[in-house]
Image 1 (cartoon, protein in one colour):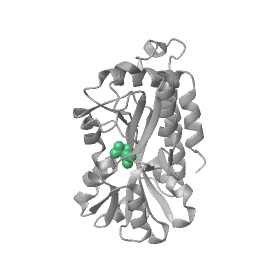
Image 2 (cartoon, helix red, strand yellow):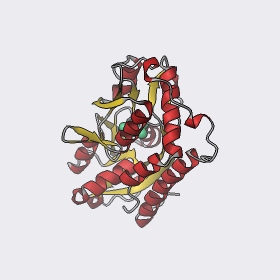
Image 3 (spheres, helix red, strand yellow):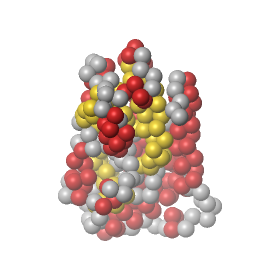
Length: 275
Ligand code: GLN
């Protein structure tokens, strides 16, 4: 069944290692890349919202993938998009967006792509295209250590904080709600974890690497991961379906930065395995 306590740390590391393997896997066969080293589509054909600029919509409250350092966005996705932009000869601008409406916004061409730790799901693929996967992720359950809660079943009938519109919300709705839990959606993970600290929810279900980072950044906040949920998610860059040239260009640039080690460097910079 579930594994708890120190095992969670092991699982966390395992998940992060899986992320590395995913990167390695995606760049597998790099000795003979197929279409990966061809010249990307010229920027002029990409129908960008602002010509010459790749405008990226992102919920910038999701460390280590994207967060605001003052007025500047930083994180794995930011470095990755900057590397992709460089390959394509484009300036990259991050624009903060609400995660819950980010898909509708990219469809409406408010910006060119979504880079927001977004999981590729068949449901979302009905509305947008995704680039090839760039990161493997899972879900997690965090509680206040002082609550004494150590198992998933102790959350039956309790309040579960989630970020609205996420795969974490979906998992909690499918797996805890049937057992009498109340799912409480928040605009972002910051809101969900603030509520956990204030004890207005009993747990937060959220992407494992992000919860691990939030705990690492705030060790005195009293959070602990009690469960890692192997949902086997993969993050992709979201693009409107009527921008196939942009999708091809992004995939070409992504394959290049996987093959030449840039993405691995970005992984090593932002993803810590020591937590
Ligand atoms: N990976 C999760 C999802 O796609 C959460 C993403 C996020 O909150 N930025 O739903």
